[in-house]
Image (tube, rainbow, N blue to C red; front, top):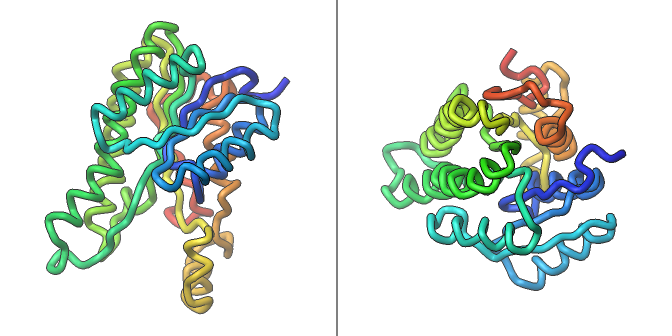
Length: 248
């Protein structure tokens, strides 16, 4: 039997990168997938077809997770379309990097709203169906930058550190109802974004990692699968660093 057979998962920001990888992994393991995107409707429909090829139900929703009302409407729509909600993956996120002396209020607010407020919005809405069925798994995408900080990323670091504190608090609040809340803190993950960087810069980053390589999207997706499945039935309130030992 597949690890997520028949489960209903909502994944935010699934149109590319880590979110896309998690969606594919979950579909492969039998989950029915609801996902959000902000790009074109055509791209959303294409992703739905890609996921349906695994023999599961998939539907995309054009929704802004940082909008409180939109998040509530999204969860209501998912429950109406799929019947319930078993798994929430809070993955939507952006960066607007610059030194604090140059950072504008807008750059701060945008990153906090999209990265952190969205996690509050979706978790608050998703807890309703999960409380009703007395079961659920919430997985939040943080970052090792939220643990160690990084110059030029104070807004991003603050948002990702906030996710960790939120994750642990929700684990304490909802654990008695068999709803688990955990976080993943990826390190240097090689995606289409890093492909555009100078190869010398990428090699420099790899050299700082004990395993001497960057992580893959599948490395993160496998961790999300573990946390979303019953394999981690007694794992709650934890942060798993997927960083090849960078923070060791």
